[in-house]
Length: 215
Image (tube, rainbow, N blue to C red; front, side, top):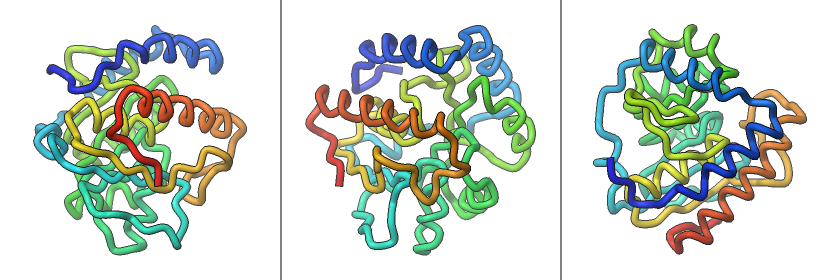
C-alpha cells in the first residue's frame, strides 16, 4: 500500500526505543507471525480515514475536555472515556493494555478495532483472539500479513496511522505528556518513560506535516 505520509524517519526512533527498553527484534518478529495466525482482519481501514478529519482521543482526556467532530479514534483505554459519554468510536487502536471489557463492548457496538501485537502482549493476544474482530493488524516491523505505520504508544500510533492513510486533518485531544491519564491502565515507571517518547513522536509528526493539532 502506498502511504500518504513518509515514515522513513521512524526507524531510527524504533532502534532507540529498542535500546532503551531492551526490546528484541526476534521476539517482535515472533509476535508478528503469531498475530497473523490468531486474527483475521476483515476490512479496508483507509476508506474510513482518507480525506477525512480525524479526532484521536488519548488516555489523558478529562471530563471537561470537548471531543470535536470527525472520524473518532480512541487510543486503547480512551475507549472507556468515549463510552462514558455515550460515544462509540469509529476506530479503537489497542495493544490490549486498556480496559478490555470496554474494548470488546465497543467492537460489538460497531467500533472497528486495530490490534497491535508486540513481544510483551503475546498472552493477551491469545486470550482475546476469539473476542475481538479487528479490521487491521499492526506489528512493530512490516510483514506480509500485518500493517506497520510506526508509532510506539497507541496514541502516537493512531496519529501515524491516520496520516499514513490519508487523513485530511488530525485533532489530538487528551494527549497529556506530563502525567499518566485516568484511562492509561496500571501505573508503571515504564509508562511514564513512554510518555516522553509519545511527545517526541507527535512533535516529529507535526514537523513533517501541518495536518496535526493538539487541543
